[in-house]
Image 1 (cartoon, protein in one colour):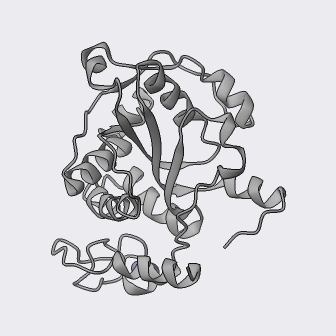
Image 2 (cartoon, protein in one colour):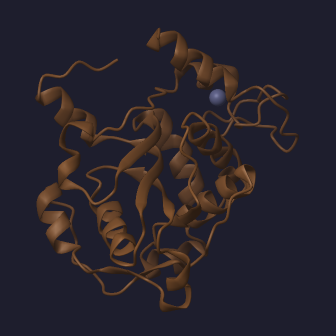
Amino acid sequence: MDWNNFLKDSGKAALAAVFPENIYCICCGDVTDPDSRSGLCFRCSEKLPWVFENPFRSYMDEFAFDDVWPCVRYGSYARKIMNGLKNGGQSYMAENVGQMLAERVQLEWDMPDLFAAVPSHRSKMQKRGYNQSELLAEAVAKRLKLPYQKGLLEKTRATASMRMADGRTRRSMLEDSFAVSSRFASLVPGKKVCLVDDVTTTGSTADACARALKAAGAAKVVLLVFGASSGYKKVEENGAAEP
Ligand SMILES: [Zn+2]
């Protein structure tokens, strides 16, 4: 397969159908192509670093999730979109990003049984009034006509700031900090769960969530994210070529 053409076509596929609410590009703010259902103008769609490979593929034995499905490499373009989603209160953007996530899921042959969101820190959520991961999980599940359970995962305890901690330290700090809510525990056993987050850096939070899902009986956990960052760096350090 010609990987570059594949990426290019997939990027274009994100512009393929009508999403009439879109007037302005969710990345640069320019007037969009009226045919864009991803909410991106043609220029931003071409510039976004689409990348669909698991960023942690060279050290997956360290994680509880079984695969990672990203859309773009996290950088200045993806950051603009995520900042708009997080800080601008533009929850309609979740519909656009949800569309891109849905198209990412459709590249896989193995469809999930259930969607769940990575819980956000309560104080951050109160400030914004919503959890962007929940909005994304709901939007992608709706598009794929697959079930989504809000509140499936709960944060069971607060964690100290992890800003300076590396991936392994983060993972040990987060151990047992998430659990499947007892209200929805019967939904999980034997299921292929798709865990949705906006961005992953070290994969630590998603790992803690995946651990909780596996403890509750999930057969498989896949992490679906819009942007992924530092995992790729580790791959490069290990000498593997990036597409
Ligand atoms: Zn744009």
